[in-house]
Length: 193
Image (cartoon, rainbow, N blue to C red):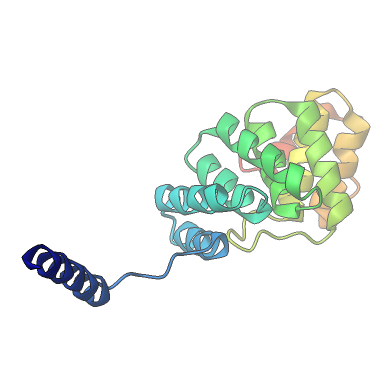
């Protein structure tokens, strides 16, 4: 009998402890993704990456979490890792404009010019007025400038000039015959001189 009373006392104690301990409700992948974008907006890219990674662990099909992870990693200058995240995101959402914008920027940084052109063209086809909501500097004009630089690097000067016309319509038409002037226009636009 004493043994049964001891067991009852232990069970009662456990019940009281479990009722008194405050447990936070478990976060969803969407919650972690939202947290990640908040951290990203605050330029805390490490915390953002952690939140997006938690979201992906919960829901491996959440393209927005892969997008955020890629951007957070890219802003830490780990470009190849960013590409990997974005590639996984595209597998879940082939029309995610933010992912194509990120790929365009990072492929240009990696000097992967053909991939830069491919991603930039997909983005332009998806959203002709693209603007990344978390960084006003990333927009369709920048994408066209990066495409111009990529085409120039690939020695397709006519396409480079056309992309500069789209990047800076006020200065159109850009001349593909004067390569030095075209290169200077691209570099000026991208802030490289």
